[in-house]
Length: 105
Ligand code: 2BA
Image 1 (cartoon, rainbow, N blue to C red):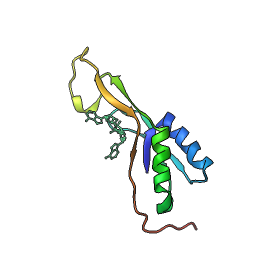
Image 2: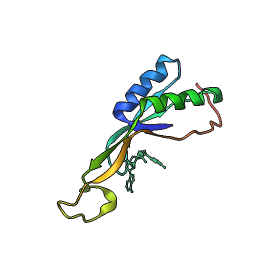
Image 3: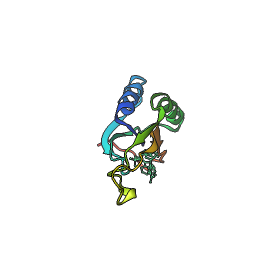
Image 4: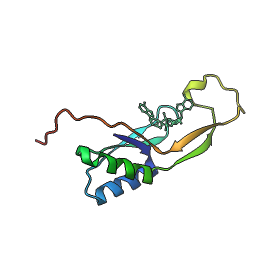
């Protein structure tokens, strides 16, 4: 399960599918920045996990960005004009999960 920015996620989906790896894209949104993201489900054999991770690293590059603090959930009452904070955007958050059972009915 891969959470990525919408832009990077679309590139990653194309990369996975062009190599014959399955992928499902689910629209999502980060709880902190509240920006649109994509969550990609890719159910693969153990042997293919590293390929998925490699493609994820290639397509989802991290960068740092200044974000206004107004409206962010953790800062509570922030005065107007408070300095923006720097956060890392892009990249991907990956959960490698064991699948207990897989069925297509
Ligand atoms: P968001 O929750 O929108 O977080 C976006 C980025 O903002 C985070 O990047 C992090 O750099 C920063 N950030 C998050 N909470 C912060 C805080 N309290 N103070 C300062 N900066 C903060 P990533 O850590 O790369 O996470 C990217 C997205 O992946 C997250 O979007 C969230 O949707 C998801 N995510 C990350 N870790 C997760 C987890 N353990 N469980 C579920 N989703 C997760």
